Length: 78
Image (cartoon, rainbow, N blue to C red):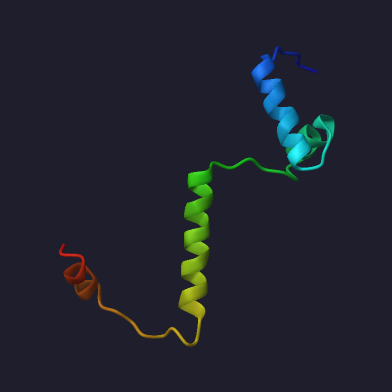
């Protein structure tokens, strides 16, 4: 096992995160190490949610109108 030193700020952050998820610190770290829990950057999460929403919109049978790219650029004054 590798040992390291954590600052008090990091320990407090990990402890608070574990509390938010109703886990002990040990359970939190174990789930992360087992790949059951992932930490993701909020901007990356927003991008993934935008992609998901676009896929859902594309597959909606009531949303089948296509708009030409040239019309989009014109509307955006590009």
